[in-house]
Amino acid sequence: MSDRLLILDVGSSALKAVLFDSDATVLASLSHPLTTQTRQDGSVEQAPSQWWAAVEAAVAQLPSRAGITAIGLTGSMQNLITLSAAGEIVGPAALYSDRRLGEDEVETLRARLPGDYGLRTGNHLDPAHTILKLMRLERFQPSLSLEAAGGFLFGAKDAVIRRLTGRSVIDPTTATTSGLYNLVQGSWDEALLSAAGAALRQMPQVLAANAVVGPLAREAGEALGLPAGIPVYNGAGDGAAATWGAFADAPNTAYAYLGTTGWVAGTMALADARPPRESYSLADPIDGSRAIVITPFLCAGAALDWLAGTTSLPVESLLERAAAEQDGPAPLFLPYLFGERSPFEDRAVRGAFLGLDRSHDAGALCRAVLEGIAFAVRHNLEAAGLPSQPLTVIGGGARSLLQQRFLADALNQTMIAPAASREMPALGIYRMLAPELGFTPAQPLADSHAVEATPARAEKADARYRSYRAASDFARALARTMP
Image (cartoon, rainbow, N blue to C red; front, side, top):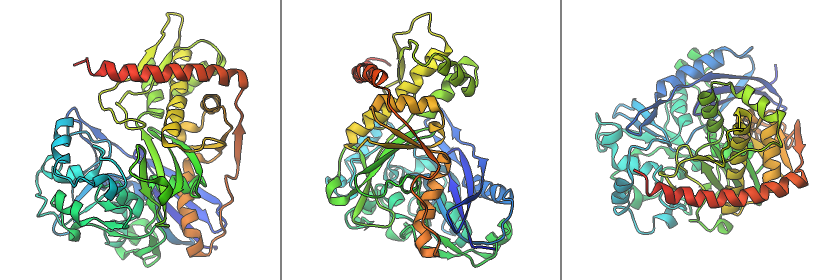
């Protein structure tokens, strides 16, 4: 039996277990859903205990666990996971999308931070940065004071690693999203820790993505049906894993990810990224001289899910209706159903359909949503200064051929769509670990297909994009006048 690598991907909506052979072949890919608790106070939480339960459930479904000789991980970043003095996880994890801290409170906390915060972290202060949650820990973990906490974790995969090995670790990419990591120095920043009231002893150890955290603990191995002692590799946060999976880890490359949310990202030399900038600059998971430039936007596939719920039609039915008249008239859609994070930070802005006509049916609304998502990708690419040709698009939201066509026309560029786009983060971890394991390197974008822009539709899309940009500005101004 050849050596096999098990990748655990702790996403925001599901836990995936992806099994690779030593030649980069995916032998199995199984997932288990995760539940998020969202409340009116802005809290968005998940129970770390369900992450581990999902790991057990997904691994148990693998057709065979024989030959697994290593484990690697990826998962959501920018979470707040609190440990007790005994090292046990306390309460739920506050996710990156948690919005319990209002604008006024964020501004009050900003005043407590060093004036050169952006130069230290490589990023302007974002209300989602975990440092702010630490500064108001009583809002997120009322049963435990900051001083009494045994430690903190900031990535979903790091909570799973702790169950696997007993160690608290983090990769450089995930560490960057905390607002406590010095991007240039490549370490926790003592001035930022002091401003947050946290201690270095409470921080997880920063290790490269291809570092071995430790051997699989006996208890965890028994729970998963895997041999104790096999190496557990640190892996990286989902933004880095997807970047490597899309083969955008070399300078001057870019890709787009469409899931429930979305982002565009690429890799630059750290000196060329010149942080802080309007987009995010995240530490490369392995090479400290590079940065991943990423602009995350809050609504991609979630917009289609919302439309499906509103129309009481499954997403598949909406896409079929949209495809039947793909060149038909459609309103203009602004995808700001949850506010926006990039290319501008605006919690108050909201989405809209503009130019609605009583003749517009569910298919027309679906076309508008797909176009709005495509325009969000273009807007973010332009704001980040990332190349757009040819653009690789990955994630579950990129599976629709119609969405791919809207993207190609919106950017007037070729779209490259890998067949197994939902496994791209796992492939990224495979690529990071293959040299360490002696595995065969993965081939760039195998089993992908290209979608070309259509000149006439691209010209029309360009005109509508200009209207989209003007409508975005209007929507932001309008939000300031509404209660």
